[in-house]
Amino acid sequence: MPVSFSTFERLKSKGVAAYKNGEYLAAKSYLVDAAECMVELAEHAKTPEARRQHEELATELIDLAKDADRLHKSPQKGRPRRRAEKEEEGGVDASDWIVKEKPDIGFDDIAGLEDVKQEIRLKMIYPFSHPELAKKYGIAIGGGVLLYGPPGTGKTMMAKAIAHEIDATFFVISPAQMLSKWVGEAEQNVRKLFDAAKAEDTSVVFIDEIEALVPRRKSDSSTVMQRVVPQILQELEGFDRKSDRALLFVGATNKPWMLDEAILRPGRLDAKVHVGLPDAPARYKLLEIYFGDRPLADEVDFGELCDRLEGYSGADIKNIAEQAAQIPFMEVVAGKAERPISRADVLAVIQQNPPSVHPSDLVRYEKFAGTGKQQEPAAE
Ligand SMILES: Nc1ncnc2c1ncn2[C@@H]1O[C@H](COP(=O)(O)OP(=O)(O)OP(=O)(O)O)[C@@H](O)[C@H]1O
Ligand SMILES: [Mg+2]
Image (cartoon, rainbow, N blue to C red; front, side):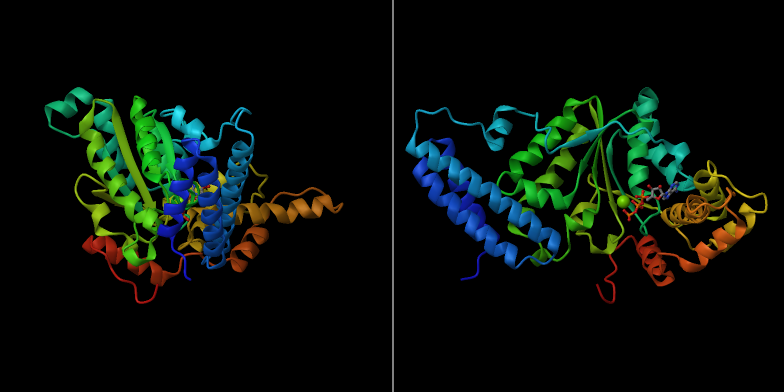
């Protein structure tokens, strides 16, 4: 018999409810069934990562079932506090699954992307730093921005820097985590996340790899996603108008054409910002950032390297600097005389490492930027 997520969820929620009501015998039986269901889902998981997450969840359920069994047999012994219970009592304090930080990288740490920074200043930063003026001119505070572009161009970095620039608390949701941790209590947890974000003076809620959360093909997503996504969308729409506390929402993706149109509607991720490959001045700055603190031979010419590195992303350039530094380092470890990184080291590493972004991919981003609509790729 094929099992589905909805069967699993039904069994699990019945089990958890029975456990909470102290009906331990019933709880045990539902939880064991739910765990078996999860084991079967794990066997059919599409990726090793999903499989591992499913197996972990099954183990958690078995632990809870064992607990229920023990409590059924000796009810007088104190009930141990399970995670689900602690969360319920804890109100908005769900700190074991909400990732919350105060990033310390700012716009100055990001090479290039001047137009992106300017757009973000206009939409997200100046309305905060000049609230009276913003009110006067009717400029909205808060809202959502989608950062899209090829891998390794600084989207995740940019999201953190936005939080830093407005001194906001940064909340991160990863769709993969949602699936593993939030099954069963997903709606409740979305609520808690947004409540925690709203409790701060200013916060940035960041969803990385957002295409995994809101894929266009509904059939790809599990029932959890189908219930949670509309709820997230609703929270997004509500939050800039609900209170004077400011909440920004940032999503990042390198597959913007896979997004569901619902998330791009006004009031949600309505501002779309293309984060592209670094131009020549940005590549120069990247070389300064990543070679700057390393011993470098005088013959190394950043101007020359800058030309050689056209088409490379920020992450590629960082990687090249690291690999180039390894060459003299390994020699010195092996007993040779100390020497700085040479031009030949850097060129050899560039030779071995073509750009990670293929030119044909760039065309897709430009098409998406041009039309603002989804482009169905030829093959995904
Ligand atoms: N413009 C940049 N300035 C400085 N460093 C950069 C820049 N772009 C990329 N990097 C470096 O590359 C690393 C990867 O960047 P980041 O994770 O922000 O990329 P991304 O666009 O989010 O990629 P992905 O789409 O794969 O998630 C960063 O940690 C940083 O070290
Ligand atoms: Mg990223």
